Length: 360
Image (tube, rainbow, N blue to C red; front, side, top):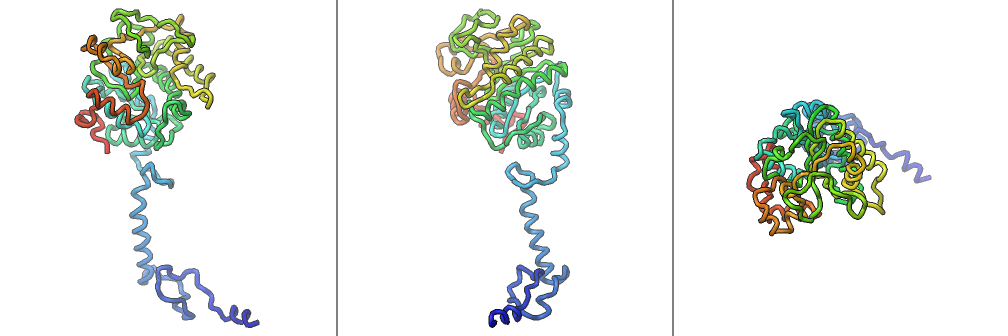
C-alpha cells in the first residue's frame, strides 16, 4: 500500500526535458515546459546539432562512410557516364586503351600511366573502374577517363590471385572488350602491373583480328613464328590475357564471345580456383580456324617469369623490350619491390608525369 502511494505521488518526467541540462528534475512548471527555440537551452541544443552535422557530413562522400547520403552533382554525373560516351571521349585514331582497376590497385595504375604518358598515348586511356571510389578518384583528377559498368565491387577489398573475388573481377574483362568492339573501336587491354618502355603500336604488324603475348618462359628464337603456339600438357596453349589488342572485326568479336562462354562453363570453385586466363586460351584454341591471330614478339613482350629471372637473356635482347609484365609473382608488396629493384617503380620520383599526379 505504501508502495502504491509512493508511485501516485511520484512526478511524471517530461519527455521534452533538455538532455544537456544539469538541473535536477523538479515539480516546477518550468521543468515541464517544452524548450523554446529562442531560449538559452534551445539555442544550445541547436548549436550542438550544427556541430554534429559539421563533423560528420564531410565524411559522407568517403567510401568508408557507412551511411547513405545524397551524391554531389559531380559524382552523380559520373554515375550516369556510359561506356559509349567514355570511349568516344578518349578514342584517338579509332583506338581505345583500356585497363580495369579497383581502388587498391591505384598505385599500379599510376605507375603504368607514367610509362604510357612517356609514349604519348595517355589521352587514349580509359580506366574501367570496378568500384565507385575508383570512378570518383580518377575522374576528379582526370575528368572523363574513368567509367563504371555495374555492378560495382567493394572498394576496400584487394582480391588476391586465385580467390573468387579475383575471378569475378577478371571474368568481366571479355564483356568490356566486346562492348568496345561493338562500338566500332580498336581496343588494347593492359593489366596495370605493366610498364611501357617503347610504343607498342609499332609492333602491331598487319591487319590481324587479335594480338597477344606468350606467357611461357622458354626462350624462343628472335624470328619465332607469330602463329598460335601448339597446345601444352593441359591440351591448351599458355597465352597471357594481360595484354591484348583487338580490331572490331567479326573474328575478334567471336573470340570474345567464346571467352565469355568458356568462363561461364568453367566457373570458380573452392576445388578449382580458376582465373580468366585458361578460358582465354580455350577460346583461342577453339576459334583458331575462324580468327586471324598474331603472337607478338617474345623479345618485345616478355613475360615476367623471363624478364625478371633471366638476366643473360635480358642483356642479349637489350633495346628490344617494349612492355614488361610484372607477373610470376603474387602480392602488392612483392610486385612493388621487384619493380623498384629493376628501376621500374616510377611513381616515387616521377608522379608528376602521370595524368593523375601524386596520389595521396
